[in-house]
Amino acid sequence: MKTSRESCILFIALISLNACSVLGDEKTKPQIVVSAFGKHLLLDSLSSRIPNELSMEDSTLLSERIVEGWVRKNVLLAQAEKNINEFSSVFEASIAAYRNALLVTQFEREFVASRVDTLVLDEEIEKFHSDYPELFQLKEHVLRAVFLEINEQEEMLDSARAWLTAADSISVPKLEQWSIERGAHFALDVEYWWFLSDVLETVPMQVYRIEDQLKDRRLIEFTEGDSRYLLRILEHRLKDLSSPISIARDRINYLIVQERRRTILEDLRDDLVRDAWANGEIRRDSILN
Image 1: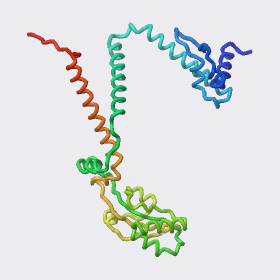
Image 2: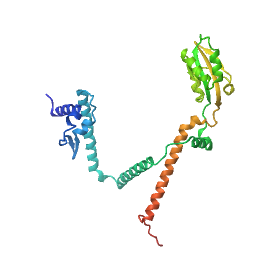
Image 3: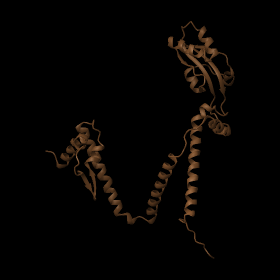
Image 4: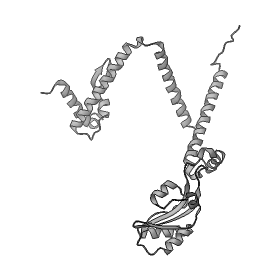
């Protein structure tokens, strides 16, 4: 035989499964699921937190957890409110300060969001990169390169070698089509900057005097296992130097927008204080010795 509590939970689950269809068009008095210390958990609120696709059993279990959590929270809240006088005035001041901080933060967030321009022009990014190179110091070598990996048995490589050596707007599309037809793995974006560690994960070439190797613009070709690798380095930049703009672009964009946000906030605060003085909403009495 079910207890009254179990029956209540089962009822909640059954209602919650069809909450939208059963209660959606009816204007009925809010149904209370549970009450505690003058507060009520309504059936509508409970039902909205239970996905329609749940089974009856899962809905019942979830309903029970929600109800028990709601009860625990309100019991603890009521106990805290009863004993609030036992806390020092510092606690009340903390609550007020927290509330004020939330209000100000929300106001400033909405004010800035409605006014900040998030579009950053290429010219602004280039100037920022030029003005603050120390912010974009590389922590490892980077390079622009094109490369491919193909079965070691492939013999028709003369055209691929020529196209890879040229690496221009005419040869790259041809090389890409050639690679696709032969099932080769390739990276042929001539504008993309790679971290050296990322290239070495794909192209396992031997590294000995890496700075000299990076300067070599000749076609590099070698075999490893069942694969043949062809690599052409187009440009490089050594670690500890300023990174290329393409690598730093996202960060620069973020920093510029953040600076705009900061400027808007500073102007807002200054304007509000100035207006408050002008409108007589701030008064300062003279203190005589």
